[in-house]
Length: 202
Image 1 (cartoon, one colour):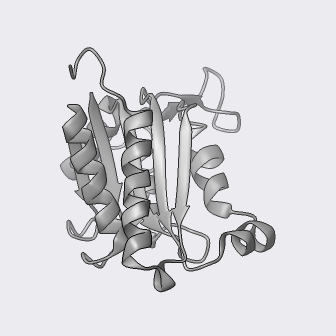
Image 2: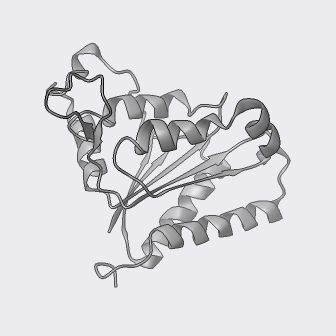
């Protein structure tokens, strides 16, 4: 199975990168094919031009390639920090340009775009790994955990992926090496649980 990994953190020494490396390693160990994009390292252009908004718009080949990859993916992993209850701008731009009509969703005939879209993604599951410097109780009780709403309800739930998992690791700034090693073991366990070996990978 082909798994698409999208990483969005500017520091290559970040724990987000460690999560990505662990995810890649575990998926390959299981036998999956991995496509990974480090958006900052690739200098992904997050700005959505007006001309790309229509469904039938011509898009640059780099965006078309991303669209082909997410359409083909049997699983998706998103990795990013929690910045102000949101993904980094570069990742939001990736969503704007790649989670396109005709690629990730469509509207029924006669629906001009005001209704509920029909999901087109075939991924069997999505896993989102976040890092945070906010205590989990405060994130939930004060802020309402906006990342859960964004990824589960506003994006992948509308694009046809019903199996969803998200885990936030924190507090990163005060974490110990032992904590980080334990968190990476959790990443391995989650990846193996949601993307087990199948007939194609055995």
